[in-house]
Amino acid sequence: MRSIGNIFRAKTRSALTISAIAVGVFAVVLISAAGTAGREQVTKTLETMGINSILVQHENALAPPSLNQDDITAITRISGVDKAMPLMASINKTKLLNENINCFTWGVNANAREIISLEALHGRLITTEDTAAKKMVCVIDEDIAVSGYGRSNVIGKNARILLGGAYHDFEIVGVAKSGISSLQSALSGIIPNFVYVPISTMQMLTGRNAYDKIAVLITDPSTVQASADVSVIDSISSTIKQKRGANSGLIVSNLLQQKKNLESILSTITIVLSLIAGISLLVSGLTVMTTMLVSVNERKREIGIKKSIGAKDIDIAREFIIESVVISAMGSGIGAALGLGVTAAGFFILGFDFALDPTPILSAIGFAICLGGIFGAYPAIKAAKLAPVEALRQ
Image (cartoon, rainbow, N blue to C red):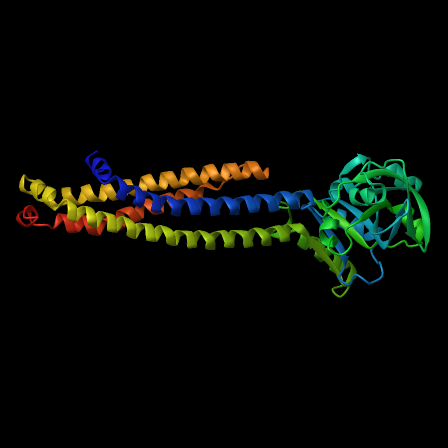
């Protein structure tokens, strides 16, 4: 209690020292929160784009289609594979009213909702019945609907799609959310507008039987093992190589690895920025030392009196160390509270879920308190070594 009372004897000086420590901890909390928010948003975005789905495709985008039903059958037999879906693709144009829109037309089946995370904003998606009957129906992106009709809900309207060298009339049975599927994530920088039709219809109109790609849904991308220490993705690659040969040109791409890479980058950036913020804590430690040295000089007579009535060196040193630690603890608590408050407000404004990693925050508080003890040690030792007579003369 005596140490706390000494802090308030020099209110302005103590307040400035506490503020310096609070600023350092505040910076660490904000940086940690930004890093956590970044990782959370990356995870959520990739999950909506189908992070547990992968694509088997040719490395050369201009190579002729070569995948077939036998490849799908082989892939679905792999342990850890939930479903596999054939894909056909065509860069073409779609006419809505008087708008002629560049687009990417995909031939899909009823598994598109799960495997490529396709979500209907209006209407429905391609069904098993559509594929079996080779119906002339389509699902278009919301962006295409807005470009053609000025609104997103265009269910029942017609779209003229260029396939097999000619335009064909398709009924729009669904409007999908734009920019969420794994296919769009891979190609949005090239052609952002997607149209989906039954794959059987696309085969009929283009006269093609082979598939351009195979989309595969993995049961659990984080824990499932196809065999001992071999991931499902590696097992798919191995199966393709065994079936087609090592020089087939086919590759397996996945968003899971992209997620890991992005998270690793964000974690590295967060650590580097936290270390930079930690430098401000070191400066704060020097401020604590300066404050305590001034305090020692001001209280030499008090120290002399205490020593003359029996106070030991360890008692004097302990008092000053406790004082410096309390100052650091107060600054850390205020900085952490302000950081959490600002972070919570920022998350609320941006619409993010409030999620923080407590480890770096607690580490920053602990580090600041330890620095208070370390940088307060020299003034404490200096005070303890004062000779009573010499101190009383001050």
